[in-house]
Length: 293
Length: 335
Image: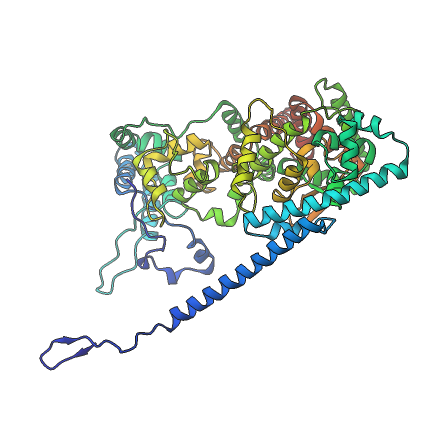
């Protein structure tokens, strides 16, 4: 079920100590991972320490990264001298992204592997099938593979072209601050009939968690983690974008730059998608040919 | 609140509760409402006057019409202004026909696909023509855009997002490398002529009956796709229930039997901030200018005939050929 979350940042997280550039980031709508999912993620990382990372050097490096993360997420000390507790994992570049990098995870492996049992259990409890986070159509897979094989200069050009051909709403500075729930609600506002949004929730999405969020006028409720893959799949939007992925983590691609292209591509209309894909195919062909020469 | 000697609390209630701020709010609210009511009454009076005396503004003041936030009032004002403009348009078309003197009205009406009696009546009273016929008349005989005739002033057609970067690049090439522009033009002509399924320009019979409504449907989806929303939500203002219902009928009527009037299309052009030609002609670059928004947010008007020619042919190509041509050209120009 959805969790009541304040949009304001916790007082304990040291708002006043932030630099101006960091304060801009504070405008980001805060959404926390639900406790059981957070526990599953930490458990997975602990497991990596005990079984997978056998190389001492790698273990040491990962331990350093984890310590640095914990330090950055530690709340300010209380007046009585007690050290602050570690803040809960939030979506976005400060919370979830560093943990994914430490655990060598992508957003889709996180949902499809680490959270798999929890998601299956929770979706089954409300009578809905599990939807994979890594679902891509054939053309999207082709685009992903082409972009992953490109050199960075060409990929930047492709990103630029994709951004110009895709709708602009998701590229605005305001849209960068939306939390996953805000993004899902924005998409459903845009793609479902305004007047029918409450009455006619598509059956694929009508989980108790999603319905509660739609009914909540104050926007305190949050969409449960297990529903996000189904929402991304229903509206056919990029899972990376929906989960506030930044340019340091990926969902299904190898390069974060490819995720940007995929996000832009998935917002395009079907006819524009064909044009864009054709242009990228041609560019990749020329690139390969010039590489061989 | 005060503390008594026996350590019990005493609640002190002020004699007069402070109600000044709320009173002020109420007063401001009432004043605002009165001012709004007066404004609406004035607008309604003006609308009645236009309806009675046909003294609306022509050329139509699109910005003023669009700026009205009350949907029903905006709709009424648009109807009254358009209705008034129809009398002006009749005079303009009659004058054009008598000035040129080259056309027999019966033959012209037949060529446009309208009944000659109906055409003569439209010229005597209020102008009226189905969208397909109007496109033929404007592009084949009047040589001005339908938007210019119906609204009284030309307006460049805003290009959809997928063509904006392409059009801007072509516009830059004019100054920098005219040879490249010529090459692109020749390549486009070649692809266009090899395309067996391409649409014809209106001048060459490219607007048979039913074309305008099909194009209108495509364009409404295109506008909505550019904003990633439903067509009825793709306007800055909230539309009236009737307008929304009519748009839905146009979009979802599978049998293509809905005939949209040119005046409803004019309302849509105002609401969607585009031109009438964009909504009803396949190649809206054939006569009118185009506009794109540059990276710095400024509007760039495109009037070069080669650039317009390339974009026009692109618009008339079948989907496969357009995909092939634009795919090749976009990768050549940008990647």
